[in-house]
Image (cartoon, rainbow, N blue to C red; front, side):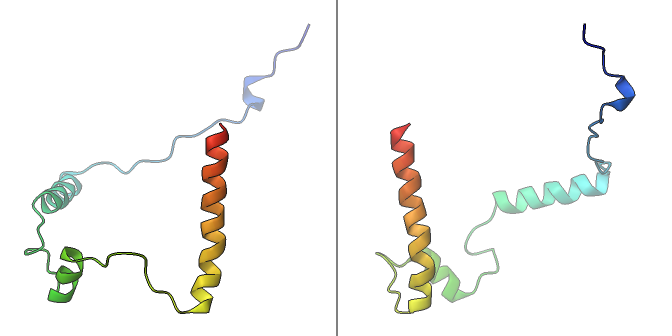
Length: 90
């Protein structure tokens, strides 16, 4: 027969301490949610160049002439390809 383990010897998992919700915190959160809900390009405080880039993004792959960037990108691209290949096996 196996002896039971005393309860006081089992490590206890503790829930993280949660900050109490106050009316001020809830109002700030609600204000943030409402701001996101009603956000447009015109009322977001974005400069004209940023709005232009968002409305007319670059098309096609970027032209990367920097060899250091290419060196960083190639391992990332290979790892993505390997992940896709392994997912197809499953």
